[in-house]
Image 1 (cartoon, one colour):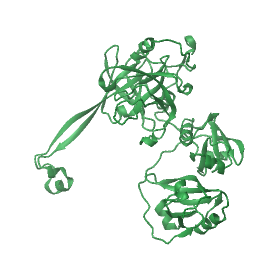
Image 2: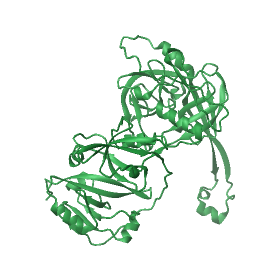
Image 3: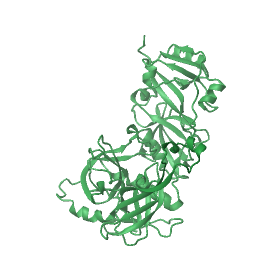
Image 4: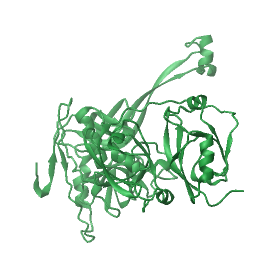
Length: 492
C-alpha cells in the first residue's frame, strides 16, 4: 500500500495474535542538507507522543530469621525450617524504562532488559496520561529486544526508518525518560555503525549497535533514537561510562534488527534465525598474506560442519567470505549477524576468496539449532610432551582417547595437543595456548605430535599458518581458528 510522500504501509498476518500491527515504514534516504533548519521542534512534536514510559515490577519474597544461623540451610535441616521465629516478607522491585509505539493498535518495542523477569508491566502514554497493563508478546535476549502489547486503539505510532541507510555523521535525537525526570529529548550524531560491546563485557550473541553521542542515561533504555525527519532508526539500549551517567558513548539496537525480531515473533511465536554451519574469525593482514588474499577483508572460515548447508554448498575451511547476497562482510561478528538474519529455506549467494581466485557459491539456508550448555572442563594431564622446535617454546603430545574425552573433542578432530606455550614466544603472541589441538601446519594435516614436529622443521616460509581446534568452556564444544606465527625471529 503506497501512502502520500512515498510512505509504504507494510502488513503481515500474525499467527495466534488477535490483531495485527499496522506498521509504517519509510525507506527513502534522509535529506542530508546541512542548511535544513535550526530547530527540531517539529520533529519532536511528531515523535514525542510515540515514546512511552515503562514501569516493570518484580515480586521478591525474602525469608527473615530471628536467629541468623537459621538463614543457612545446613542448620535448618537439623532444627527445622520454621523454628527461630522466621517470617517471610514480600517486596516489590521496580524498574523504569522507555518504549516506542510502533503500531496504532498497541504494539510497543523496548529493550528486553527493561522487562526481563517482571511480574507486572505498566505503560504510561504521554499525551492522554493513561496507564495500561502490558503483556510481553516476545522477548529475545540475544538482541535485547522485547515486544509488548497493550489493549488500545488509534495510538500515535512512530514511523520506522531503514537503519541500513544510516551514515556516520547523521543527526539523531534520543527520546526517553532518564532517571524518571520525565520525557526528555537529546541531540547528537551517529558516531559509528556496526559496533560490538563484547570487549566491554557484553555477552549478547548478536551485536550491531548504532553508536551515538546523544546523551543517554538510565531510564532511556528502550526509548527511541530517531533521525532528523522523526523516523525511528534505533532502540536505545546501553552506554559506556565509568560513572554510570552519559559520557557521550551511547548504543542503540538498529530498528531493522528490532523489526525483524518483532515480525518473527508475531508470525511464528519465536525468532527463526538462519544457519549455514560455519565458524569464522576476523582476518588480519598477516593471515590475508598467508592465504594469498590481497586485502584483509571479509571473514576467514575456520570450520565447516559436516552435512551443514555450507558444506553442501562447497564452502571449505580456509575460504574467505567476502559477501552474502551482495552485502559486504566486514568480520566474524558481522558474518554471524548476517547469517542469523537470513530466512531459513531461502537461497544465499556467497562470494568467497579461495587460493587466489574469487568464487560464487549458493547455499540453502537452514535454521539455527538450539545451543546446549556443558560446564565440564578438561582435567590436567602429566604425560611427557615432545618438543616442537620450529615453533619456539611450544610443547606437544599425541591426542590420545583419554585426552580427547577430557577436552570433549569430536571424533573428526585429529592432531597434536599443545601442553605448554612459552609466554615470550612468537606462538603465544600469535594466540596459541595450552590445550589447543594443532590440526594443520601450513595447510598440511597433523595427525600426531611427530607430524607437528616434522612439519615445523620443514617450514621455510616467513610465517607459519597453524590451524587449531580449541575447547570452549561452558559450551560442551569447541571452535576452529587459524593462527599466523612469525617464523623469522626466534626467542632465545
